[in-house]
Image (cartoon, rainbow, N blue to C red):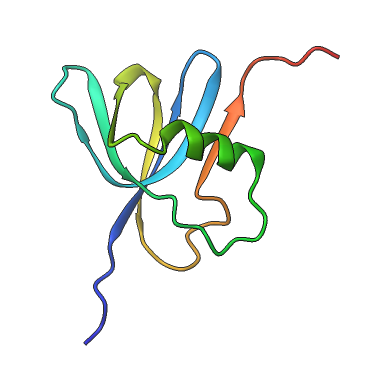
Length: 102
């Protein structure tokens, strides 16, 4: 018997200072008007030897979060993927939009 493929969502959203990209198993309209709810965030990339600072920062930020409610206007894109071993090198990323002083 084959294993059924599970749906995974790659969610891109942006706040005033940061852009986020993360993987989750559940994305839906939130109970709060004008919000998207993201839950079941995927962090299971434990086989990787190198963990970037961005990955570690997001892991700490969302480690104990059960659900995230994000305003519609912060959403950039939601991709629906079929889970596989080659879903991507990085499960989650964070980018600082602030300009760095030289």
